[in-house]
Image 1 (cartoon, rainbow, N blue to C red):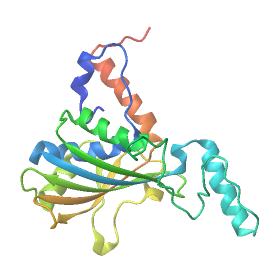
Image 2 (image 1 turned 180 degrees about the vertical axis):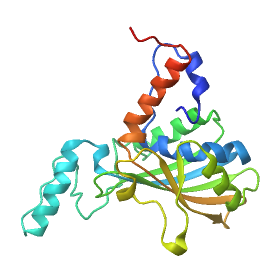
Image 3 (image 1 turned 180 degrees about the horizontal axis):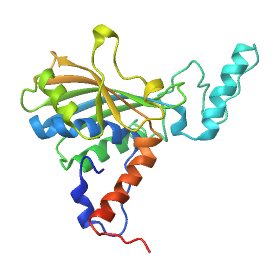
Image 4 (image 1 turned 60 degrees about the vertical axis):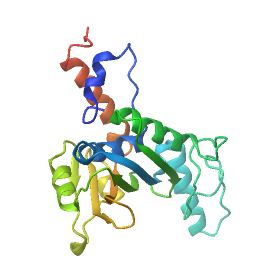
Length: 232
């Protein structure tokens, strides 16, 4: 991830993996905070759009909404249950410990991209009836105190991040507004008084752009800039 671990490109062995879309947007926001106060633990719940599954899932949601509106029976083919007007706590396959593969990816990739295997990560990934744009509720426990005001300043200065955090004016990140744009949007920045040095964030991004295509292009740009690949 160019905003997080660009130096890792220097020791690649010919293959560089794009992280999971949910990991990308979360870690883009977490890295500047981690550098400032070191993160000890992250608890994240995701609200992931159907476009993350693919075009067939987008079509299924659209058809289900139409069928319900016209009083017709609903059929589910892409997902195990109806996705329209519903939430599915089931993304990818279930593992022996009860978590899903999607949740396991978030745990492992967060540690890897942040370069800190000691960070404790707990993830619950949920598919929601939104066409595009993933959202995340993120609870963070730091090693040192990080006031919300300083966290906000760090995020404003961070590359690829846009802060939308004015609850009094009803300004906070929304998937419908993030869709079709490149940044990672962060808002609802506030203390969590239930843990030492805790903060809560709300993070939203277009999962097809920053969560996939844009990040891949940015990786290629880093490799070209460092002369690690050549274009014939």
